[in-house]
Structures are given as C-alpha cells and as structure tokens.
Amino acid sequence: MFEIYVPLLRGQGEWRAVEAVHVSGSRYRIIGTMPEGEEWAFVPGEEVECETTEVKKGKKALTAKRLTPVPL
Image 1 (tube, helix red, strand yellow):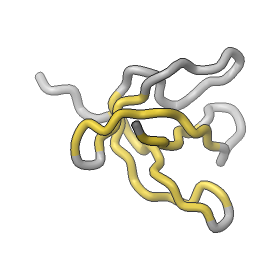
Image 2 (image 1 turned 45 degrees about the vertical axis):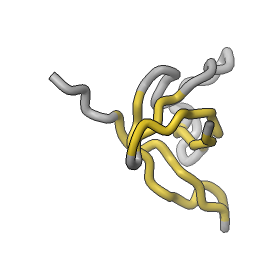
Image 3 (image 1 turned 120 degrees about the horizontal axis):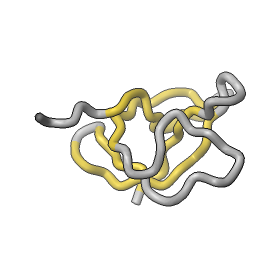
Image 4 (image 1 turned 45 degrees about the horizontal axis):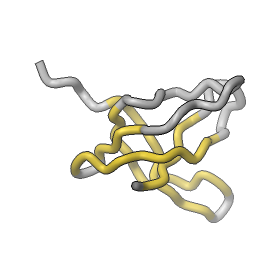
C-alpha cells in the first residue's frame, strides 16, 4: 500500500493523505473510505495519475492530478 494525497474540494490548496494501491507507472487506485463531512476531488475506487508535488512547505509527496482514462 502507498500513501498519496488528494485535493479537498473545500479549502483551496488543502490535501488529504489517503491509502492507495499501485496499479502501474504513475497510476494508483484509491482505497478505504472518505470520512463523513469531507469531499475529495477523487473518491475511493477511482484510479488516478499521480505526480510529485509540494503539499506543505518543504514536504513533497505523490499527489492525485487526474483520473486515468478508462479503456473502451
């Protein structure tokens, strides 16, 4: 398991650390549950592409940037 960060929908610039499973390359599937009262930009079960980003002053981490395209 890995820890990635997803953006919160309320509070610009805020991130939430979540558990994820590595799929391949820069792709991760978010697992676990979203706490009541929070809204994430990406939800558990979705596969996302991640990049290294500064989430706090001086702290870099893998962050979810976009949903991975679903094959047709």
